[in-house]
Length: 157
Image (cartoon, rainbow, N blue to C red; front, side):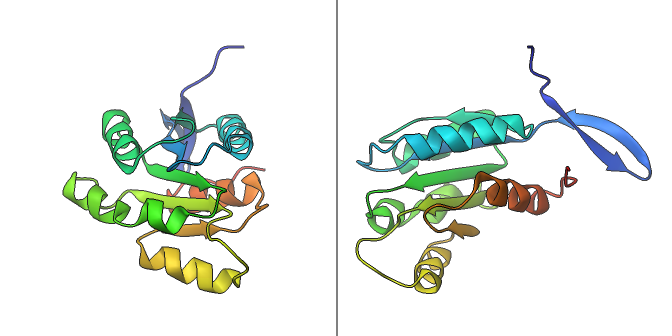
């Protein structure tokens, strides 16, 4: 089955085909947990997004370079080993320095070591410049719905 790289957008009562948004994604730092990343990648593609999945053990610079190369709408970071705070510190600043200051930044997974309330974890990562923060075991559908809203795309059934 051939993939259509356009998404239908409604404008003033008419439907118009526009290029599907590109999302850069990867598992940051020394983390090698790939299953959640692959599940999310599959769900995003099924929802009509184009993904540039860098896989595991990516750096901030890898993510930013790929976002620039693909003119990405968002960078999605996964982390499961609990060290995302260290791995992600300065990512928003790197985006700003690289000319993509307004790119959406999403992060999800097991982001910190130890038991902490998710509200505290979310505030921590919002303070690091992330637009959306997802706890462990979040559904791909929740990320997709928020991406659609944040990118001004129509909600699909």
